[in-house]
Amino acid sequence: MRLTDFIIPLMISFILIHGLVKGVDVFNEFLDGAKDGLMIGVKILPALVALMTCMGMFKASGALDVLTYAISPLSSAIGFPPECVPLALLRPLSGSGALVLFEGVLSEHGPDSFIGRVASVLMGSTETTFYTIAIYFGVTKVTRTRQCLAAAITADFAGFIASAITVRLFLGI
Image 1 (cartoon, rainbow, N blue to C red):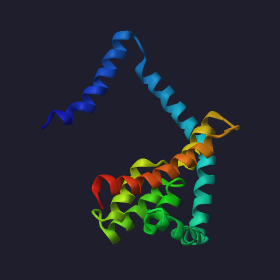
Image 2 (image 1 turned 90 degrees about the vertical axis):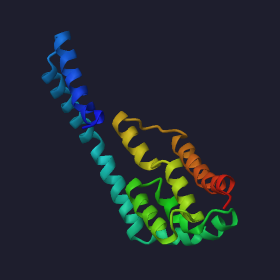
Image 3 (image 1 turned 180 degrees about the vertical axis):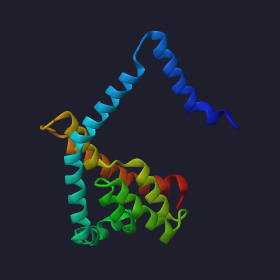
Image 4 (image 1 turned 180 degrees about the horizontal axis):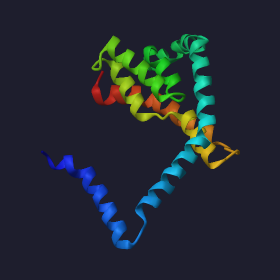
């Protein structure tokens, strides 16, 4: 057995012993924390369901394909591979949906191709913007987001472009 096999049991033991030494009712504190966690889950569920429904409709309606076709000439002109456009469009909406597209890109073009490397850098340098905004603002009840969405989309766009530039600069492809 390795030391790493004991990390989690040691952490749990430390927390229990520390709580007992400090005179804390560890079980009730655990229950309170679990209750708070469930309440947060209940608060974010409507925003999450709405976001997933909209994303499913976006993909099922063919809008993703139409938008990809419309953007592909522009993406080619700036050096961004058209094969990564659907990934770039879906990444701000859904991490799991983007992961499915990412796997498709890697299996079709290979992880060591220019397209595969751009897709890999894109996945690591962008965020699921709409999901994050929906969850965080839903939990905190923020209604006036001001320039948050515009700034986040601008950052995502910069990540898309930078992924192609970075792969060309550092990997010489």
